[in-house]
Image 1: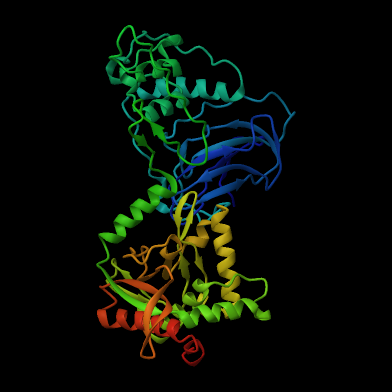
Image 2 (image 1 turned 180 degrees about the vertical axis):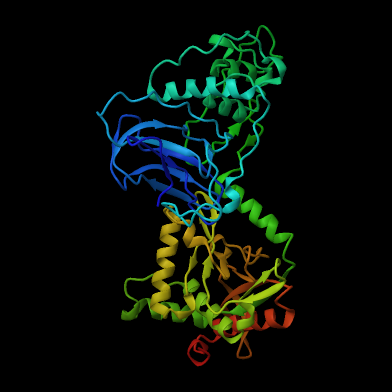
Length: 479
């Protein structure tokens, strides 16, 4: 079963699916098709960005694109129709495309209770059918006029004339000013209130020029040449930065992955009582082991680096202290101990910091762990990490050392009990066998949820990781 509806035997509509567990909305980044294009079952028609990742959506049937309901850059609620397909082209006159609904328009039909299987992800969350209320009773006719104009623009012809309306800067009775969605986005990016803009377009519609005119500096001397309006960046996958006229500030819309990161960090920091412990350790022998593993034929074709050995050390420490691999269930007031380890690796990507995880990392051999780690990093850097790859993590490693940082106090991933920060590995003077010698040294920081991990348990885990990195042969004797 897919997220589609049938308006007739000829036309089918495809709804925005829940592309990740419990997500309620996604932004349309790019359309790969236009009205009139032929599509086939499984063909990718658009790319959307959720709070977790960018995902490509395939269409589940053959036909010809009849209409696109939303332009690029629009945030659409899960369950709303985003595209209509003519599955029997040439069988008769096609009805005119329906007006494109504004982003806050409620869905035409209520979703059934529970999760409905969809094309991508795990189904629509029961709460995802809730829609934002409409703003004012007069919004409906205006929304229809704007929607018709947008659909006409998408189809490449002039918009039909809207009902006559008084040409005024602010519609009567508190209604929204008339403007197409691209113009509304421009006004939002430039920080302009459309209610203050004087419209010059037909039937009182605000144009791009009207917005630029409102954004121009107001108090410029008459003799001085007026500054040109700031150029607006074309729509891209990431939210465009907005530079003020004075070039003294830059405003970047918070949405997508960055918005999710902010919400998750605030939720974690103010929900779980964090405790962080530190230890500085001589990892000279670990660095020698890494060099040897790079020459080992059993490790050929996989990435070998210090992070691989650190990851294995953390897995062994968890095996020796299994109580640390747990989660706090606030609703049921229970500690949920996990008998598996999904090892998260924090990765910096063009879309922001994401934490995909290696499923069942505890069962993997060193070569298998190296292969999984290499694949995880490559996929993250390419921006192709799926929501499923970021779900279900139990513990996390964040390697701040790659930025030359000695250590930090990492914030827990939501639902996890521990996170290990690895600092830069540097050559430092160290007392070794009674003498001061140059040794490879790093600092580890372990943050843990003090509701379920007390100081003793957290200290044991951190000490075990340090002991293994100091004497890597313990990977064999302790495993």
